[in-house]
Each structure stands twice: as C-alpha cells, then as structure tokens.
Image (cartoon, rainbow, N blue to C red; front, side, top):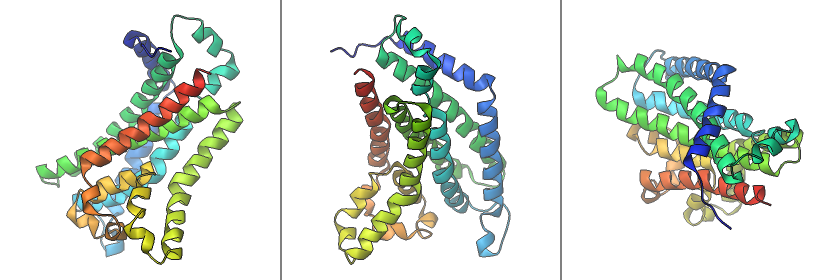
Length: 275
C-alpha cells in the first residue's frame, strides 16, 4: 500500500472544482449571503441591549458566531455531499480513475477545490463587513476579527471533510444528501442537547470530568470555544465558560483539534474509497 501523491495532479483537480464553482456563480451567491447576514447581525446585534448600530468587536463577533455555527456547516455539507457519489452517478468517476491519477489524489483535489471556493466566499463575505467595521474599530480589533474569519474557514473545512466522507460511503446522491442533513442536525442541533441532558441527569458530575472533552468531539463547539475565549467581553455572554476549563481553551490546542476534524474524516474517506 502506498500513499505517494503528485501535487500537480491534486492541483489540476482542485482548480477544476474551483473554476466550476466560480462559473456557476456559487461563490458569488454564498458571498452575498454571508455579507448580507453579517451586515444585518452586526448592525442589529445589540438590539437586545436596547440599541442598534455597529458597536464593539466583542458584541459583533458574539453575534456572528451564532450565525456561523448554523450557516457554514450547512453550506459546507450541501457543497460536498455529492463530490464522489455525484461523479459515480454521472458515470464520470470511472473516466477520472482511468487517468493517471490515484484515488487519494482525486479525493484531495476535490476537497481542496471545494475548500478554496468556500474559503473564498467566507473571507470575502465577512471581509467586506470587516472593512465597514474598520472605520469604527481600533486596529487591534482586526486581530480578533481575522481570528474569527480564520476559525470560520476551518469550521467550513471540517464539515466539508465530513461531507466528502459521506459522499464516499453513500450508494447514491439521495442517501448522501440525507446523511449530510443528518450530520448537520446531529452536530449543530442535537449534540449539545444530549450533553445538556447528561449534565442534568448526572447532577452536574459529568461537567467536571468528561464534559469539556466531549465538547471537543463536536467541531461546532470547538469553533464556539475558540471565539468565546478569545475576547473577555464575549465570555460573559456564554454560560459555557463556567464548565469549560480555561487551560483547554488554548488557541493552539483548539486549532489542532479542528485540524484533526479536517483530516480524520478525509482519512476514513480515503480508506473506504480504496476498497
């Protein structure tokens, strides 16, 4: 068994995927969605405190985190669920594999091309809002806002990796889309409810033991913790900080966990794709 890869082959597949997303205006559509939602949330994010308008970077990021946790995983899963199974149904997978390219190179090329399209939409969409906020915020705020955009890109890549894994395992596009939506419900809506239920049933005992580590098993929670612990004012807006130890909130550690969420599903997908 060999895992030798040719970067040139991966680049060709990735460039093809990226060009297709540009050509069908997918990037433009998602960028517009990100910009519109981010502008609305940044402007009305302080409405609960009885005020509107662009306020501090802490409040803006806290509001945008809630948006990103719902929106980016869904877009990433929709983007990648048919990466492999779609080629198989169209009959083009056998043609691709007949070329001098390995299955791992094909998998990585598709993942990187789709990741580039999603990252482009994320950076441009939120970057435009950041430029507008830049006139009202101190230069130091850009550091935190750049960290927010980077973590958003990593979150999208983690769920895109899960989508590619589903695409490899699924027998057809219908099952793949169902699996992708199920993953979104589980990680974004259900997982935290299960943990909260365990917290209540155990009388809070699980909070001091396994609870912080269980949060790391969800990329959406890793993203939330990355941004919550980065800003002092944001910490007070989330009760999560009372059950998650600050020693685990190291950005380097959380970044490594997020990278693991990107690589492990791809490794599983590669294993299955080689069968």
